[in-house]
Image 1 (cartoon, helix red, strand yellow):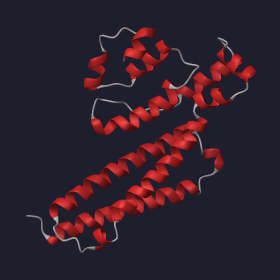
Image 2 (cartoon, rainbow, N blue to C red; image 1 turned 90 degrees about the vertical axis):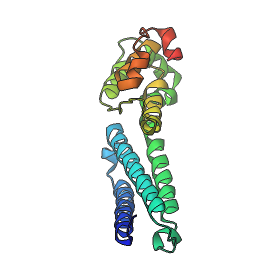
Image 3 (tube, rainbow, N blue to C red; image 1 turned 120 degrees about the horizontal axis):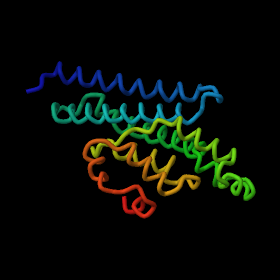
Length: 198
């Protein structure tokens, strides 16, 4: 049976995670504009997801270990506040990520620029490809807890990018899969038709 001391230690860890989230939000708001680039934002998003995963696990441990709901952790709705802060921060990050992603840049460009970007070998196309190669997408092994982050990033940066062909998208998808997820697509040949099916 879990002792009061062990529950207190779990709550202390939650308090530290709560403080980390607040510091992360505060530091992000102070970030210089020239640092706000896709790799920086994606790294912040990955750290945020890990923080939320740790907090959820800690909350579950406390709920299972303690019947006493009179502690400030419960009475002050610490979990709900953390979740609200997480959602707002994640939404803010994703909004900027979508604005800076290659697909957003191409869709907001004037018609003449869009045509130029679509031309093979054009400087706009090369610029888009260089940007994409610098982005570190997380891998997906088939584990449920990895899915949402992987889906959001892959969809925003590759799936919705109109300058990438379906064949290239399938190639990117396969390259970011590991384990069971990779095995499921191992029999798919890299063709345009197979991307939609995958």
